[in-house]
Picture 1 (tube, rainbow, N blue to C red):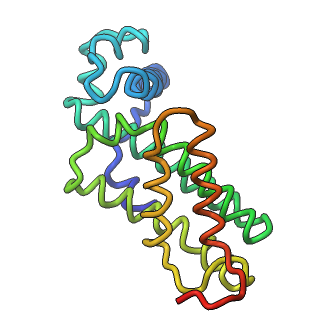
Picture 2 (tube, helix red, strand yellow; picture 1 turned 120 degrees about the vertical axis):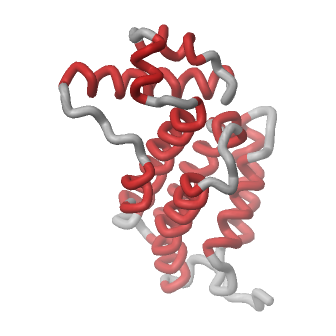
Length: 190
């Protein structure tokens, strides 16, 4: 997470300033999920219990606030991959992919607010690929996942699943079908 740590706005050292920083990120996370990437910044400040000047002192631009929320969320998804490494190889991979799909589904509005060419977006994508690769490779070595797929293939697959709208049950059904296709059955996979 070195690249992400380098890109993240540093948390203030003073206790009260640190609490304000954390409150702004938490309020922004919720507001962006509920209202989209164009959520009013004064509404985020209100939810955080701070003035708009405090918000701007910590995050001078909307883009910087969005990127910091995104980094925080990506770090949590990456940590879920680390946590999944102690599980059965297939269970670890599928649990992490479900977590990723839930994340993308819930944060679609936030993701649309990001500049896809930005260093932050690229570093976050790389972090997610790096987090998922060991899980996929472990499942492949265990004979649980198809040997002919890469983490890029898998991330494209589950990102498509995350875009399934409507009933969350529908997304889960589509994910189950996708995971069935990812599972190695011992037959010809070409």
